[in-house]
Image (cartoon, rainbow, N blue to C red):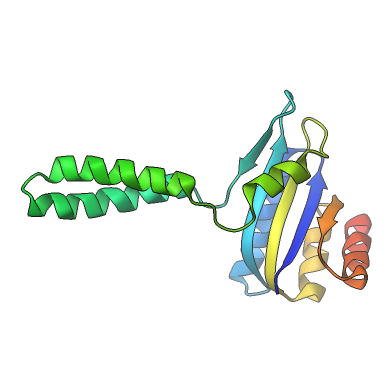
Length: 161
């Protein structure tokens, strides 16, 4: 089972730096992430999500490739590429992977304007090596589905940072 952790930071730059550190730790095989999204509360009160993967762009690229191949069969690759890109972009836009966007926006509603939260879905973690690395960023735990013992360790590590 995966653990969900949402940590609030004072600004977007800190949340993005924390996410970058998690990505580095993932390359070192110390953590396995299912998703890592930064939710930013903008000055007007709206919540903007900074996804790890842009599904719209990925869908458009894949759709353009397949559209071109199919277009070659009908001797019109440009029309096929355009139709494929449009279809792929729409498909990517409607696809939601990882943490539910509606849930993230609701959770980020607790932030004050200018604040940001790092929302992480953790599949596996070597906690004794990851917590000290993440403690440097500080932050406040907003939500988690961890056990109370794990949550206490996380809160203590963030306070120490």
